[in-house]
Image 1 (cartoon, helix red, strand yellow):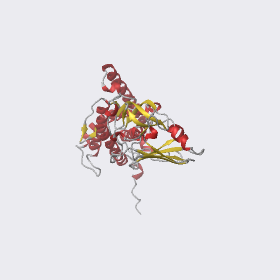
Image 2: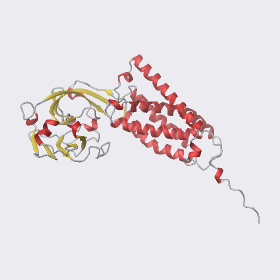
Image 3: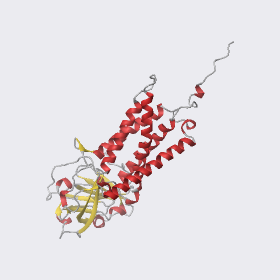
Image 4: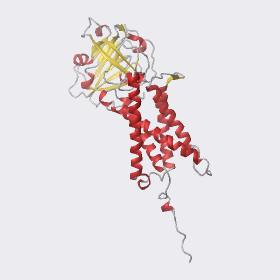
Amino acid sequence: MAPNPPSYRHLAYKQPVRHRWANTSLLLLVLAEVATGLFGMASGASNRAFLNDLHAIFSFGIVAILGWKTALAIRSLKRPAGKRPRYLSLILAALLLATLGLGFWWSNGVFAAISGTSLLNIHIWLGLATAPIIVYHSWAYTARFRIGYSADRRAALRLMTALAAGAAAWGITEGIGNALDTPASRRRFTGSHERASFKGNAFPTTSWLNDDPDHIDPDRWELQVAGQVSTPLMLSLAELREGGRFEVVEATETLDCTGGWFSTQIWTGVRVGDILDAAGVEPDTRSISFVSRTGFSRRMPYNDARDYLLATHVGHEPISHRHGAPLRLVAPGRRGFDWVKWLTAINANSSPHWLQWPFPVE
């Protein structure tokens, strides 16, 4: 009996495939970009500013790998076509460069929009759409993520070199921007640019879900305070204004929108803690929900929420309808989607604040 022919299947992933490290490195950097971008966008706290710095460094690292990989992909077109898509690498490179370019332009003060959508938002959606493509690309052009195939010391060193190049490029561009006093040098730690600070209702009127309810009659409007409280309340607007039931205070706070802008304003209103004390919050309360007339709501930690403001005025002007009249939440240290507009209810909860989507979905 003739011996069985030797099988080379076990050698397939061990054969020297040139530049396989680039696919794995791109995958890791793109996933890191998505993670730092989303977590950085969700937080308005200064102690998480490093996420935006890492986001920029990773993007420059991707460019360092892409320039070399794209040249390789172009040369590969001269070889006979195989079973894999011939132009996938070039399409992927184009998508990544477009995503990174839009983010770079916005961060450096190019505030253009396409069909009413800002470059920053296009950058975000394009990045989220590109991530699954890079996952498929890395899967198809490596040995299905086998550790023996994808992880070795040389690949790790090359990735570290790309990151070092990204950090150097980021440092140089930041230094040039600061030296020339470009818009990039005046960004907030979140990457946002200033808009109409201390100008009352003149700042932008964007909403996370593009909510825009009918105008609310202030004489018929009431704020409900319910949930884990001993004395539920129904408060009129007059009770929340000067001369009403609660002390009216002013606070200078910064609204930082995920649309890429921030605006510092003087807000006038009533402390949430005063409202909660009047309602008699139960001892087991762990979070406070702020509910809009639209049904939109956000849940905050109880101790943090006490220091927030229920604002009726901005810049000593009554808050306009588009900015959430007659009452909106002012939540320092949080991004704009947490500053709930058109407030109609406050609920005390025994459940934790994190029991919600990190980004509003309804």
